[in-house]
Image (tube, rainbow, N blue to C red; front, side, top):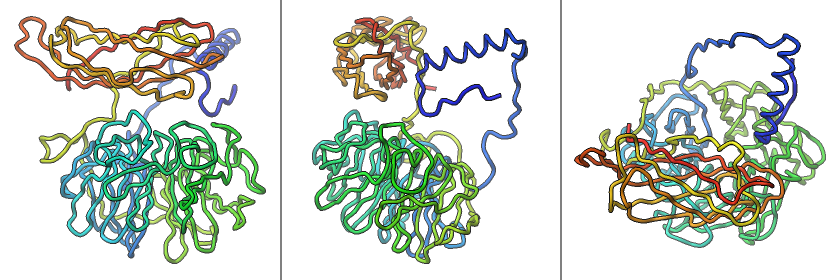
Length: 510
């Protein structure tokens, strides 16, 4: 029996209270099972050439697919036969030859001649694959998660990015959807600059940095208009590149408002779209991802029409082929699908000849070049019961704890970098980057000034990265440089406290 439905991101406290209420009712009625449910899993991963394919692209008789779950990009012929593989399957980011380089959840793809541009979402970089020389090189991002939006023209290789998710190329301009900082940026001549979005997560139309987006995750360029799948507003946006003004084709009325409709444009027609594709004659297509459908805007933009509602599961990528067929990354079915130009028919495009991907994390020992195992958390912390920041000013205290049997190295440099990954519109913390020299011992405290602007109970979340050095507590004969990342839930409570404390338990490298 279905007790209730809570789509989106329900408040954890409300959800926990409801679940406890349902459990109590089950106990009273005798309908609650006394033994735990054991579910047998046949396989951890599905069989087949692809694993959660993200974005797709097509050019010059070739098909490119981000085999995201296998951390690689496949180059196919028109029949689906593998011609080349970019990345070994090891997770991380490493430049070099196709057969030794590494990617970490590649998503967006854009092709220009012999260059394939790749948005590596979890490595936070944009890379260029030379299809003739068969080499991969980084052109933007540092490999670290960016701590701030891109607000001015800055060198691309030394600027940390936040989850680049899709790409579109025009001449010397490469446009990138920065899903994590809710922006569209342009890379050109070794520099990156913002095009639209000020870093705030919202659906606000307007010019350039006055506008706001909400997790832009799909791009399609047609003339001077860049179409954007704006996932968290469940909408589609358009940017006039000459004026850099953005307007909404549909979405809203607020974040996390969604639906499944066709007809005259109104709020709540889509649910978390991840891709758009402009066509010459069939209008603008949109992958209505969480509704498992493809839809189409009428030429005048006043209506949203059904296009294809076949057997799809969270389609995440679209590409229009020269004959008008639409190539779909059927993400949760781990396959590619070809949909006819009229949307009436569909068939799977089988991928053949893909090698078995390697498993694990790319390291410097595997091959020369730059490596990164970043992207996974050391620990997911629990919120202290009843603890939360009150509105206004307060303090967040982070206590860094050395691993058992170790001490923090006296005199060694340490750093703490943090970002507000949820509800940055309500919570501001400073400093976002703290540095210093350790005084030694088992623990060290870092105090952050907090300012919260909530008037009801809200759940926020932080990502905290710690770098330091720990030494054996007995004789300090052996020391380890540590880099740990923590996901920290932080409640904002209407009747909260002025100080909230967390302990960050460091771990040694595995």
